[in-house]
Image (cartoon, rainbow, N blue to C red):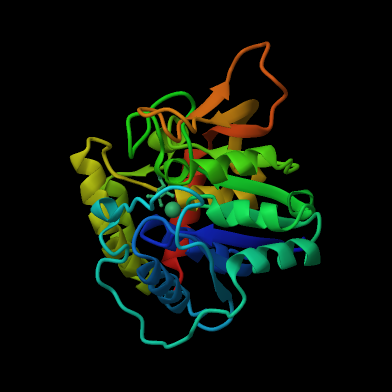
Length: 313
Ligand code: BDR
Ligand code: CA
């Protein structure tokens, strides 16, 4: 049997983050060692509740630790996305009373990186504050990580929170730059544009297929996703976008990726209109790559993986 992949998901748990956690918690290839929480989408305490609710929905209530991390970006004011996500779970509440670990996220990240040196994968689906704090805490941290998958950024193109910047990078651009400078052996971007806007959109017909599964997981998905779906349709996307879920699957299933290219990537830290924009150097004379961008995925397999996970109860 192939050994399972030791994994940490660093998350601002709301909507798609919940579904990404469900994959990490249920996929037989994943050995989810920890969930680390970072300031992002909705209020911090609500995000923590959402993570515990997600554990409950998949029947893993007490067996994966939830570590609390940064409640603020490194230097900037926190910017919420409650207009996109509401509370992130459509008003659903958990029954359990489990509490978070006393070990802070940054310490858990450093510890797990040491314990699984050269093997641990991190999937970061929120702002990169916790990852940057771990980098600053331990000079060996980046070298210990086998792969860091980042949901964030856009390739020189459309943002979502501003015209130029994707939310996760916009919220804590300094953290993102620290991470890019840290010397991780593999940093892989699941970008907002073009990848997620093209290959990770679930339209109304797909949501109907999920609803028709009739499982607890599918009912949770549909309710938790509704607000984001409505928001995304209102802004012209055509469905909800499941970039966080895709990021976890990319870490678990290499053959999902059809094309991936190396880039030197930097984050705009000064611009007024372009704060948090990710600049992917496309030129032949670009500096050596510090990351790769996933350019296309097998959309059909992605959809099948999501439906398969949601069909189980
Ligand atoms: C990212 O921001 C959040 O709203 C989503 O969870 C995703 O991680 C998209 O910009
Ligand atoms: Ca997220």
